[in-house]
Length: 246
Image 1 (cartoon, one colour):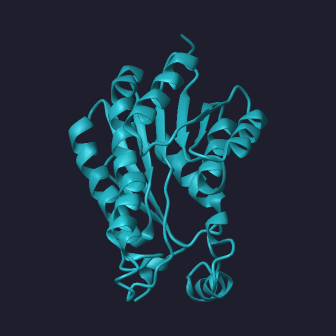
Image 2 (image 1 turned 90 degrees about the horizontal axis):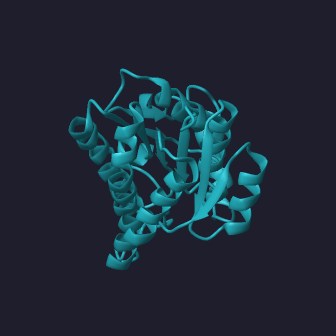
């Protein structure tokens, strides 16, 4: 079995996930690109990267999540890094309680929370076998501070943060588990969203670093955590200093 590390990056056909896949590939890590729907974009990204593969799967479906991990191991013979980047949101004003329906809550939890749980559960035996396995969950500043695109989204990310800590305590010393919590990042999520450009300009004007984040900023933080052998259970805010604001 090759000693070259293997990473599965869920939700990696665009945005933060795609940037993570590129950064890991730059470091010589073999990458599995994944998406639930954007097959063409996922295949195109995998074709750009050396010895990468694209696998379609919806991580909110338990059978598909398990099969995704199995196919990754079948392809490369190992799994060393799991990055849970698959996620979704709804843009709902926080005071519009009726719009945040139980259906919205269930959908966001199915992807953002249960999807993470299902991929981790499937991956753990392989990560343990790696000898230096690690998980990095993509969370959000909204899971740490009261904000975000909607209340259900923010609460789902708070759940991911707590899950990260519980898993780190449970899976150590064999597997490290950390999370990266981005602030406002300029990704396709904001395409066509009313007021998005104004929000970006406002954030850029008040943050200590005076700019909104780029997917590459998050990708670098993820890469750093995959190599930080004495860090586990950490939720790393990557928000341009937004947590310093009142």
